[in-house]
Image 1 (spheres, helix red, strand yellow):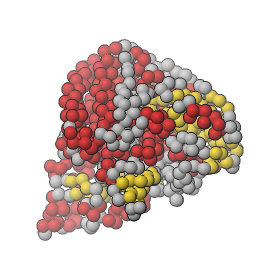
Image 2 (tube, chains in turn yellow, red, purple):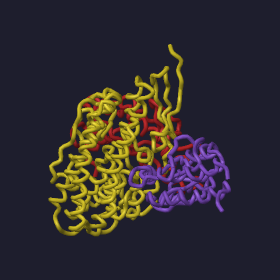
Image 3 (cartoon, chains in turn blue, purple, red):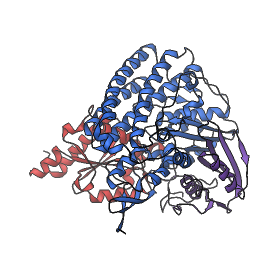
Image 4 (cartoon, chains in turn red, purple, blue):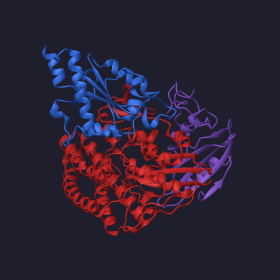
Length: 360
Length: 125
Length: 145
């Protein structure tokens, strides 16, 4: 037997923008065992959510993660609204879809860039981030902030998109679509990218289901599962069909995310064309009643589970978030053993890890 | 209201979870909450590729030991460790045991999510 | 003024460390390296190795576990060094002030030279913070008049 080495991967590592540590056991170049060490990003947001009054939590929940922040905020509102239950005005539903898809678009572009960075494809990384800035610009123009939009409040949304802004958004989205398509074509057909990703970190359909993974990671293994299929907000009125790949390797995951980025542009354009006129906010009556609800939202990284328990006061009795990466990390324990040291960064990145989400 | 909720006890937990595993359901998560003198643990499952979620709920004493389901669903290992750290729920036979140091550091507040604890962030004084 | 001091001020190498941040500022730090903001035109290079770095850019509040890592990284950076706290929570703890696992801002652990406000801090503000740190650095190495 070859000698074994245990080496830490992280918490400060060039390919990881965030702190996670993997204690990896190697046998020469081959990985034989992985143990994740978390805790570098743990803040205690769930407890703080019980301490704050429920409308203030929106800002806290949005900062569970700065990339998925918009969807965290929207989903928190959706969850708390279900305690009454409250119905939000139709225009607000469409606006929530538009903002959700916009943040999915920028998140997927960000991830495609990071993937290229991990592969050493520096110029492509820069290109993806260049077009991502356009998405951030329209987010800033419509909501007032690049990263944490705080667009949703309990009962509706905070800000409307007027006709002129709508025109700008549609124009920019069409530009982004054109550029993203050409970049994705290059990425998907590049032989170096294929050499680094095809057949790496394979997860079969059965393994994927048993591991309980979710999101693009699950869909790349051939399971047609997406929380947007539940039809919350206005998704039931938009022709939404999840994107599925069957290979289950890193390349399939990249393809799923690339196609989803393009799909989310289509969804936004469709939502803009179908969006009804009207109110965007309805003030909730009274305090959240004593009730408990669950809600699932599709974030860029996968399905996010929310649980809220009200007790008739301004505070929530219990609030829980199970973020997508929390469920996806166990899949690393199956995917990494057997791979080579140089493939570790790509495989880790292929689950689109979001550590601040995971640890809250 | 939680849909498809079933009350169970800790003795039937593993049998019930095995049924989900046999039916190829996906493990979603567990939610633990503090009821004062008892802990309420709810397990959520999702029949893939269906859209409905099923839940199982058990209420246990604070110093009672419950079996780990990580032998059936490896994915449960993180959330079981988390429940142990935050609520002191004793889970027996976890596939990876972080010994209470998964999310919390050595000098973090102990059992931070328990209701009667002072909630402050500054070291739990 | 020697060539080493001059190059330290002209081309500072930064190291970015993420505490228990929400990612918002981290992504903005990365975004300031990409084409629209492009800090590399000022000679600023992002480094993964603390021993190569002159400036430590810290995002996010300090929690009980990262405090040790942060201290360790700071000690590994050669003198003279600058610390920039990016974002509201790196400066004071911000929105996470009442979370149980949070110690507070970066200044609970390290001496901070420049605080960059914002949640999340904008790339322009981050670049501005680096420029301020450089002015301070040039005084420290004796380049400034």
